[in-house]
Image: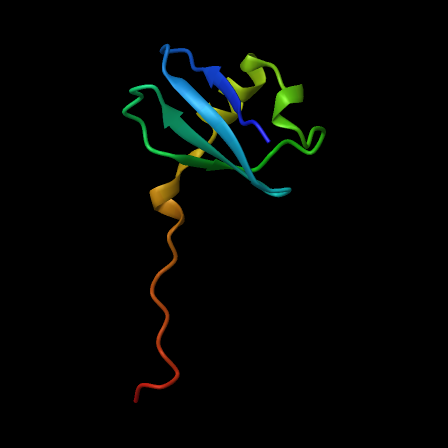
Length: 80
């Protein structure tokens, strides 16, 4: 399956990868220095190829860098 590519307002290139039905990842490509970002796909569309570049730009603007999604380490149940 191919991934959807688009260009943001600054001319940077991004690739949309569908991680699940509830999460897409926007990955920088072609020399884009940005960080990968996670987004929740819009409820009205489940296929990134059906969205316009303008809609994808709006989702990118409202997205959060993937590094902010890391959960804190969990305590091991085997340690005292």
